[in-house]
Structure formats: C-alpha cells, structure tokens
Image (cartoon, rainbow, N blue to C red; front, side, top):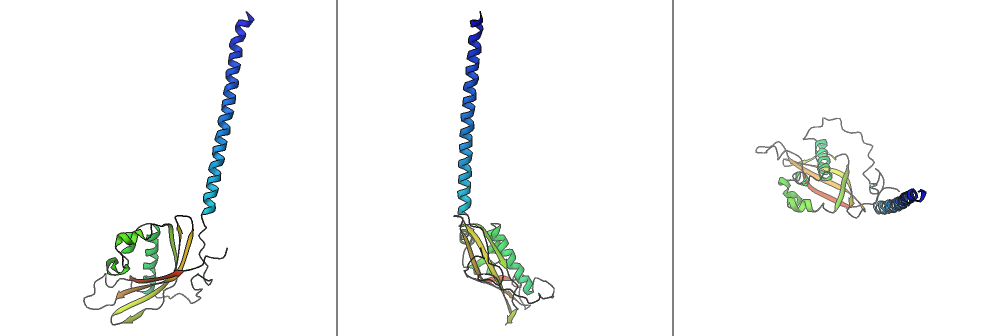
Length: 203
C-alpha cells in the first residue's frame, strides 16, 4: 500500500528536480546572453569617439575674442542678424532639415553649387552635425551690396563612430536698400563657406 503511493511522489520529485535543472540552465543561458550584449555594447561604445571641439583660443578653436559685444540692436539687417542666419543654418543641418538649410544659401540655394538632393546627400555620412558660431565681423559695403564674415567651428560624428572637426568662416551677402531690391534680396544669405580640418580639443 505504501509502495502504491510512493511512486507518484517519486515521479513528482523527479519532475520538480528536472524543472529546477531546466530553470537553472535557462538562467545561465540568459546570463550568458546578457553578458554578450554588455560586451557588444562596450565594444560599440569604445568605437564611438566623444565629440570634443577645441575651446576658444586653442588650436582648432574659435578666436578667444575679448572685444565687447556690440550694443546695437539685433535686427535682421545687422551683422548679428547675419550670425543668427549661420546659427539657424547649422541647427537645421543638425536636425536633418537639409532642404531648409539649403535655402539659406544665396539665389534660393543655388549659391551652394549643389542641387537640394546633392546637398542633403553630402550629410548622409554623419549621424551628428553641430557647430559653434563666433561673433560676426564688421559689415563691408560697396555698390549697394553688404557682406559679413562669421567664424564657425563645425564638428560631427561619422557613421563609423569617428569624430570630425573643422574651423573656418561663412561669408554672408545681402543687397542694401536700393530700388528694386526685394525682401529676399535684402535678407542675409550664405555666399560661401570656407572650412579646413581642425584638431579636437585637449583630451
């Protein structure tokens, strides 16, 4: 009689032991998989460079200009208005709004020397794109035309995780208050951008 009841008990105990063993194996497998994920993430992080643009006054950085900022009103026509256009341009690129950025070039984007599609494609290699913008230079005038140069320090991350740094300037142009000039003519638009590779900031 005792043996009759013992067999189910033994079978249940074996079943529970097998479940425990299987659960332990599942836990170990999950732990191994999690560790593999951690190792993969660590390897990916190691391949990604920290974006570290040079500080003002350092090689590759903007000028450490101690000149007081002009107290003249910030209007769209002022040199500060030109610098604002440059800030907007790089912000749009950083947001992936390439068509809007392209339109900030003169002649409705044509001054970029690229179609809007080619312009957008030129940024496809980057996952991040930013820029520090310096104080604008003085406004140059001649024959009803206005020009302002704005220093810039773009920096970006490539799809392979590497960082890239540049230093240079943006020249903006607008038409002065002359007969026949449209609102678009009188708005600051990018005439040219001159960049050269620059070193990163101090590690």
